[in-house]
Image (cartoon, rainbow, N blue to C red; front, side, top):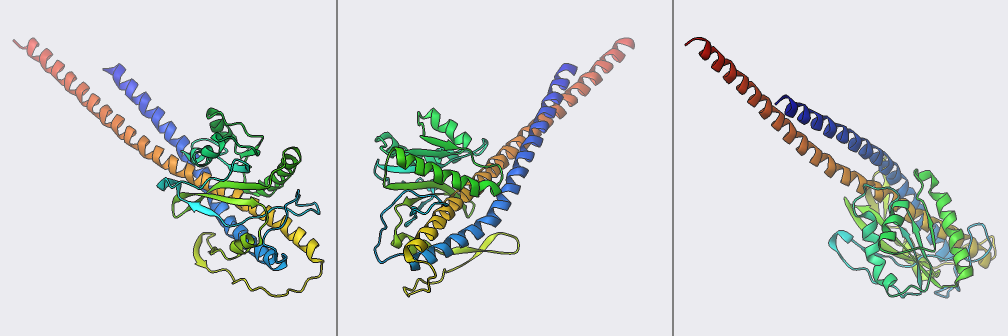
Length: 331
């Protein structure tokens, strides 16, 4: 009986230690998500302003001929057109692009995030299995491991930074990787696929980054964007300033202005996608750790109930033994 009591006590101690680890992971994820959500509103607004300026400056043609880009180079970069937003929790299928469309996937950097990476991979697997003729790029160390289990090997990969302040550097690295890939294997279309957290649920986003389209830039400038409150939460919404075609005052030649704004637009779009993915991953980790903590509490209560029962049985057995001994001593 004593052995059984010590075993149960050891199990309880082990579960309590596991609960402490889960709470620590949850706390770190909560801090990172809170910081990222405060920054997301600013990045969304910045992308909206750059898109509005670019829409004014671009020539009347709907699509600009794509060329290799670098944020610090003088070539015309690629941009964003309209987005396709679906909720993977509702299992809505995303319309697939042609196999010749390159992909940049933002997956999980660390574990304990549930099916975060699986949702993104599920949405693009039909295109991959049909045989991609354009490069595939993956952001996220844990996501890269998940992709390898599906026999998916990217042409380029990178780790998501551990802190959101490293995301602009990541966006520069992705831009240089896209340029290098276009030199080795020319392609004209590129999509970014990432997850954002909306109203407590993951939402899968797929947006074209290439080619740069005036209609797409105008759609980006027309988006309803969240307004950050004093707490950093994007809780209220407003409509972006309507697009009006007018002749703006330009201090630079149109081509040079469009080039520079286009470079900034591409960088802003990559930062936006990476930051949303960073925040969503930590939100998903918080959700997973909350479920784990609930399960740990249940197991802990079960072990404590068992411990109380075993102790009661031990006390009852001792009382019976004493009673039996007393009865035997007084015939």
